[in-house]
Image 1 (cartoon, each protein chain N blue to C red):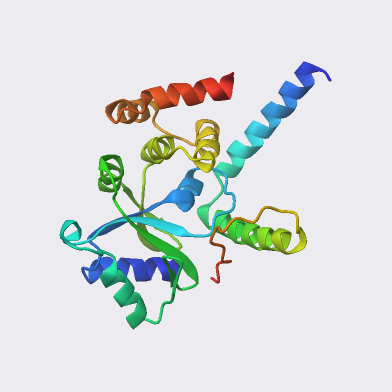
Image 2: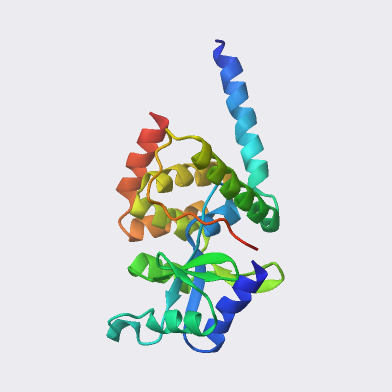
Length: 169
Length: 61
């Protein structure tokens, strides 16, 4: 995974990506016990993304030039399927802007904070999100005040209350 | 079955999963790759399993 992270960082160094953070399952498993996932999701900012029809074109072109294949919207970078996701709403955008710099496999990288991951899981609301959110409540070390501040601001408090009701009966 | 026994078992499991959450990330990635291989094996051998069109590729790292 170190080589994959090096290559992702090279995308930032070359200006193809402005910034990124690890999101999705891999980010979640940084904080909780791992279960199966198949891709490395990255939330990214791309230069000029708001003006371009297909903002990921430059990434796909870079992948082709570097011999990385494309499979089902995933770029296989050093053996790991990577999915590049634009910051698609205000919550995700803020999550990216508040990401933490960490070191994994002796390579620096960026990861979404647990409070934002939890809020995004509530917002997305798929069965997988609900299951992992429940695990976050038990297993993850997160700032409860920060979490509630975020979900109140993004109108997710009622969803949280409903979810808590479902879990606790 | 005794309710206290079940609560005790549930509590033990919670503590177990909490401790697993704290393991080094490098160890977690190894587990994820093993789980990918395991799931691939299950899909190959269990013809009754619902196999969605989900993208699956074991990491080659």
